[in-house]
Image 1 (cartoon, rainbow, N blue to C red):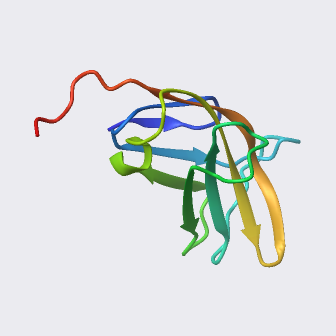
Image 2 (image 1 turned 90 degrees about the vertical axis):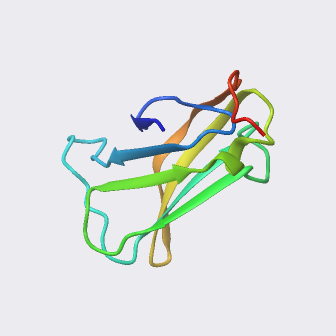
Image 3 (image 1 turned 30 degrees about the horizontal axis):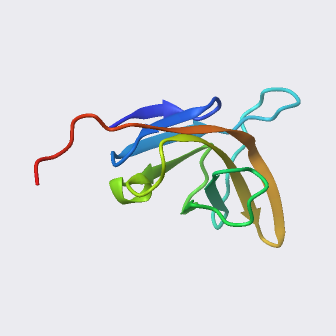
Length: 118
């Protein structure tokens, strides 16, 4: 299991779990941004950023005000994906508005050398 801050490129070993969290802050002045109850955040991964379909999509709904959100990748999310470079972003849906929280960043899937015995 890996815990990391996703304000930089992410990397996961294919077929392994990963939990990552981030604190949102304003790009203008560095002040903390607070997610409010009902906000929906979506984490998406694509092979090429112009692809129309995400290969991984994770959704987090905010149940109480917070400046931190976490996403969990399970082994099934990456086990069938090719080793290599991808892209991710995180978006915020607030009512009818949609904002980029983390813009397009590199996401890589590394090989899994040791595996669980069958």
